Length: 196
Image (cartoon, rainbow, N blue to C red):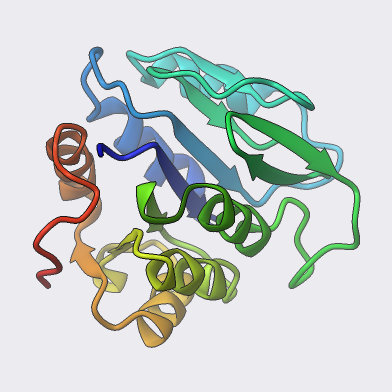
C-alpha cells in the first residue's frame, strides 16, 4: 500500500514554509497534499493564488464534499475546520480549537481516522501547540510523522510541541522535507521507520 494522503500543518511563518515546500515538489508528485494553515476568518483567496505561483502542482481551496484526487494540493479554507473522510473532504463550523479554525489537530485526527497507516503528517513552523495531538493520532494509527527541525523554523513552538508528543518522528530541516516526501510516494506505508 502506498501513502494515501499527506497532511501539513503550519501557522506563524507559514507562507515562507509552504512556499519552500511546494517549490521543492516535482510536477509528477501524486500523493494528495492537504495544507492546514492558520488563517484569520476574513482571509481571502489570495493565499491560494500565492501558493499556486510557487507550485508545479494545482492548488485549490477545499469546498465541502470535494473529492480527494491524486496530484492535487488542497488548502483548508478560512474559518472552517477541514475534516477528511474516505475519498472526500467535509467542512465544519464547530468551535475553534486552540483558538484556531481551521484546526490542525481536527484535520489530522480526522485523516488518521479515515486513512490510518496511509497518512503522512507534517508539522511545520508555528506559535502554538496545534498539530501536536493530531500528529500523535496519526502516529498511533501507524501513519508516518514528520516534523520540521525547530532550529530551522521561523517560530519553533509548534514543531517543538509536536516532537514532545511524537519523539520518534522524522525530523528534517525545511529544505529537506520536499525531497523526503517525494521519496515516500512510491514506498510502502509501513516503512522501516524513523530516523532523526
